[in-house]
Length: 556
Image (cartoon, rainbow, N blue to C red; front, side, top):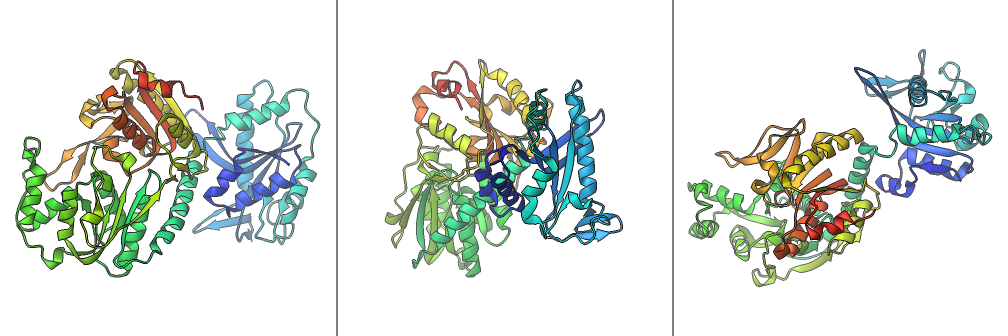
């Protein structure tokens, strides 16, 4: 059996088990003997003084002597033109032989640059087109013995062995040089786009399967309360349920606690239903009857929202403000009185979906007994599977925090890294270095977020406009219409409190300085923050805080 690099084939399969390249990789792993090493998804780059060339090779097969065979795989229908074999993508066409020649040339150049004393590297090539039968190999621009088409596709491994041979074990270190080159110089493992795409594909598939089971429940009216941990797909299930209710021509009201989450849900749903925070909904209704909230009094008046709800009770709710279905996300942050207000806006026997997670209760709210507040019994459903956090991050969470869940994501992710500071003012410099390294690994700025484990204004980052050379985008307040305002910037900064319910490929947690008196709550903040990361987690922790030893002493 051939050696595969990366070796996590079973995890790659989770993203798309029917991906043609994954199926070929399985075949090569099974059919080639252990004299061969197969690199897959190899991304090469060649840096010049003014620009960088990027490209991709589907497979690189290495034998014992250090000789390699590069394979370009083209699925689907191809064309044999006067310029050779081509694959059409809309108005564009790509010639696999020309692609291979360019890739080989660039790899040779980079190998020479990386190994100036041992610049020799033997490279052969093969075009693999399993869905197309080549009629004239010479006209297609490739030698007959350099192509495996639909007729001979089951003989790919044998063709590789014939072309490449096992080779004699090298005594001059050439095998090790070539193997290290493809493993390290080409930065094979951290293919960020592949990690992100695999994560999103696997997450949607798991949640879709689970959503179908829950929506097959027969209730009239539909009253379901789901207690699901972070990463179980509650918001995604809410969206699935929303679409089902919409297909029944139901008028839908969807409320959550966090403004950033409600804004994102509204963007994905559009104008098909009403999506808002509970407080935003109250503001919207009162505005429709000519009442304008005085937000400037909110900080000085502790009973501000109680007064708002009392005011709503004074109005008759007309039919145009009545809904057939209610969806509540982040229910652990709601007050019982809020639910009483919501019921004023529902038709009799309205359907209700309630989603919550007690482990993300960051405000110390008491659980709401829904059955005591509404006619008709709610069916409760406990769901403790985390599909969002990849294995390396999920394992870290389970080992360092007092929370339990089942790991539902078998993708490896890119792990966790801890950075320590003595004084809070040191954090921006540390984060600047972290962002720089993440971007070198392939993350874009819009795929990274810095999250404070305290309130926004208490963080050292709130007063900053830049982190290193990167402009910081941060929440600055609301305009006259209630829209959120953000500073112009490329790198997002927010608090864990505001970012609940959302996710990002790379998360940098800052201000990790637990308070002894509120350790239980801070653990919930950390849990919520850690579970936002879908690929990579970075933590900037205060070194002297004794509760951070669990992170500083953690070993992957």
